[in-house]
Length: 129
View 1 (cartoon, rainbow, N blue to C red):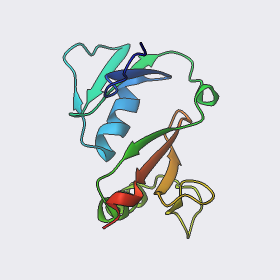
View 2 (view 1 turned 120 degrees about the vertical axis):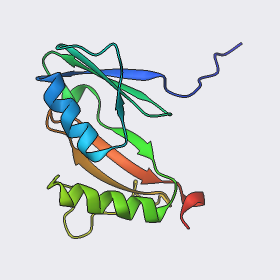
View 3 (view 1 turned 30 degrees about the vertical axis):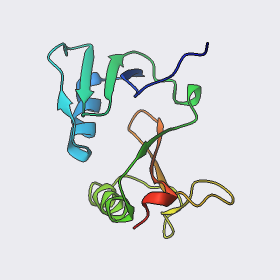
């Protein structure tokens, strides 16, 4: 019998300065700080995931990228505007929203956080309304 995976509970990232990274995340995304947070570890949560930022040496090449699904194309366009307003460099300037990959009907955009980790915000083709 195989193990059925559920929703992502949390994932941890090594970052140079957890508090500074947490401020960046909270300035862009609807995340709340977890009570277990301290100087060396900050947990940020939504109803869908918890990101744990731990003091350490960032290793952005260890994970090619992480993707978060947004509900529709309007939300993706709004996210792009927010990233630009906060001067976050988005990949493919001028044509920022595009297919997740060759032949994909899903759309996404990509950017990096201050520690160099690569992130994707995407909309599944069935949600593009």
